[in-house]
Amino acid sequence: MGEPYRNERIWKWLAPKTGLTAKDMLTLQTDVYSEVDQEIAQRLAYGIDHASRAGKQLRQAANLLRAWNGVVSIDSAPAAIVAAAKQAFYPMLLQPKLGNEWKLYHWDASIYAGEQIMMTENPAWLPPNYPTWDDFLADIVRQGLAMTGAPPDLNRWRYGYGHPVDLEHPIFGLLPWFKRWTGTGPQPQSGDTTTVKQVARTFGPSQRFTIDWGNVDTATENIVMGESGDPLSPYYRDQWSCWYRGRTFTLPFTDQAVAAAAAHTLRLEP
Image (cartoon, rainbow, N blue to C red; front, side, top):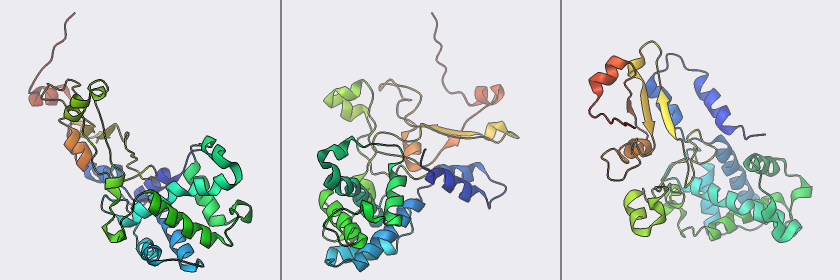
């Protein structure tokens, strides 16, 4: 079973709308709201509020989490807190029962399973030495902040800088000097694996495409780096800025539109 979050967000976003345009569809394709992250944020805030002990930094975390709108933006401190807590969750949940063998457990729906465990609060899942689920969840926030190097003032923490995108040329990326020259280098990124714009450090949407079948020459497209894989080509990495900033451009579709827009032709002959 796959996780339902992106599918649910798409349907909820589309359902009340009519007369959608290419601009609207690009807005959806680059959407970085996460309902599950916002739900987890609220549960973590409640846990900190009701834990037996919570220091100044944890109380600040709870206040940020409670007020969060669920948008996983580059500058979001609450998104960084949730990401850190999720990173700490499974080791702290499973290691007391399994020791280092907890590392063997990897499954596609792990975020969904974690959400269900947090929300249902089954006593059988609660690790020993924690009197309540609130105490445990407060501690995963504490440990997550420590593991990920959170600043003392959490208002200064920004999600995207700890979760960048970093794309490299598959061949030149193996060479240190060429790697810096031909790749993007780490760039702060919005979104996560639960948002419609599904991204992590080394992957993301390979293409953003829209088309109106009543007027095909208004189609838009953007691929990640550009058409050329040759770093010496002017077309190498020429689409990266649009991909990274959530923009796009018109894609001529009919033969006449393609001929009118063409600036360069590459002919390959045997």
